[in-house]
Figure 1: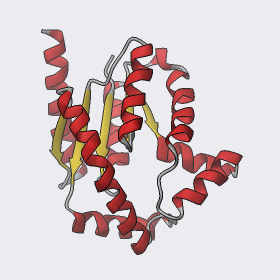
Figure 2: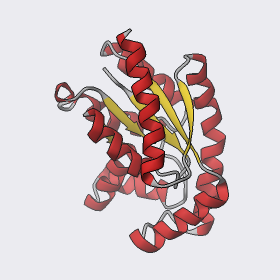
Figure 3: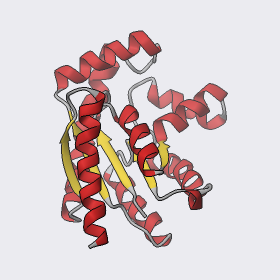
Length: 196
């Protein structure tokens, strides 16, 4: 199985690139952000809890995220070549829990791809997204807090996957096609390694 984590700060282009990767390699696309936004739209119990955290720029507790994730990992997985985790895990405990969950299913993470984009560019992209999509979590003060939280939590996760020899950083600046081409090279190289 090809199980990829696409990692990067808010505004790094994870959502756009995730869809392209999932389509090309026939992976199940799991975005905890999208799952939570769906619950929030439905105004479900979980949606209301999630909204409370997200509108303040905070991360949800690991237990809530893991419950959602497990439900989605097991749902129709046999129809795919693997899973693409879009912006998950967000904390080191989530990374450790994810390894355990995948191990129980006789699989593991193949690769963590970290989209690197400088902070100035990220802020510009998020403000632009706020205008276009009208997202409540893309306001300047919340953006700043989200980026701070991301930086705090990203380093331990990156280190965790570096130790497992599964971490690769990619330049996330450029056109959608340019960034996707860099990602493809990395994934294809990993697939070739696995075949040899």
